[in-house]
Image 1: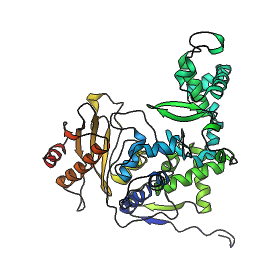
Image 2 (image 1 turned 90 degrees about the vertical axis):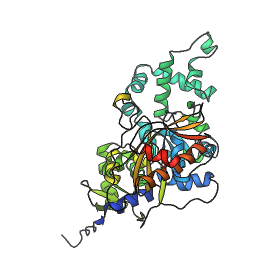
Image 3 (image 1 turned 60 degrees about the horizontal axis):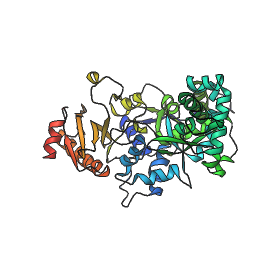
Length: 416
């Protein structure tokens, strides 16, 4: 090594338990109870700032997916507080393709413009096809939305006298594809949702002017910033974990990660039991203990990357929504139970609003071993407390254990 060569950085080492606690702290599960009502400030500081973005999903068998991360970290809260951050001025969140469809801090808008610019190449096939084959339609949809928005897809496809004639304007599916292309390209955005239907508008009427005026960074710097956010939110992560958080292209993410290591924005670390190389976010907390108790939604950022869940918690977690019912192992809409620093159980839940009951359609304990493994009775008591809290939050009167699973008898006994 020449005298001018940089010294290689010392490679940190973490035990498997330390890595698990680092990850939970980074995701906001190592904080003491809030001790007051949950307001917009708490949502930003203890949820949004920790997780970096919140995934949206249409399934509503329990509660819309984007409301569940805040409940897991803060307990019962008024979902209107999150809606205000996303839908009303001063707008703090905007909707775009982050991990999947996501609510993202508006400050990251400039750092996603590279993705918007690549819509012709990276958007899904139907969107690319409509932009390629019917550019006049795409331009007309944008023109009409700019003139009459905010509007839903149905309102754009069907109105009384479009272009001076009666009846439908265009085939609804073509309009929808055009809107989705324009959304991906950043030429339009979501003003809000009504009964989960997206209401579109142009960015200048939705995104704060200060954010729109922010200069667009280079693709490289934008991707580095998204990886910094991912690293802070994950605490400790492999390259795949980091890339997956904002679904970055693999080759570009590899180069950006190397640059962040060189600049000291990522610290190489060896984690016990992890085969891939790992990276630690500078300043990441390593708590001595984590005393969490939470039901973690299927689309929570804690469990996005399935191999990561296995590395951290030893749980093989899969979303079985699209699995035929006879082939499901744990159920349709399954939430893991976090107790302390371990995922100790999983429950298939449904909000039966007609009966005003939170249905436990299956309850399974994880096969934990070791001195720290809690007994089934303790797991059942903790789970029941979370279920009652969730039922109350959802406006339901009761919890009903109606399905199978090795934890179901202990849960029914705890319920009494």
